[in-house]
Length: 77
Image (tube, rainbow, N blue to C red; front, side, top):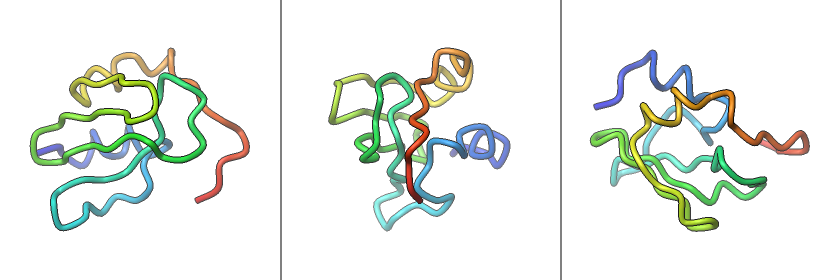
């Protein structure tokens, strides 16, 4: 399960810090100009995937690659 520190590091991408009943949190993909939260993160396994661009992997890779994130400035929460 992802810990509090990992979720805090991913906070700019996450829809919320609460998972749905299947253990998933929707999030913005960090690797393309995503304004629709097209990726999902499983907080139990740490695995994520993006339905928009096909990127996927483990949350620790996203955190490690933080400098490569593509952050849209017009996102709404």
